[in-house]
Image (cartoon, rainbow, N blue to C red):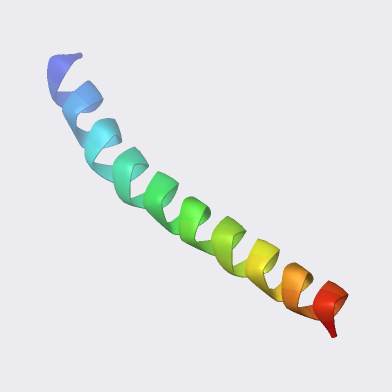
Length: 36
């Protein structure tokens, strides 16, 4: 089970980072549209 947990952690960390970057870009684009 420990090995499976390590593998899932390796996958979840980059996925979370990508999700955060996508959320930031979406919010930035939304703010730009509101300003425009």
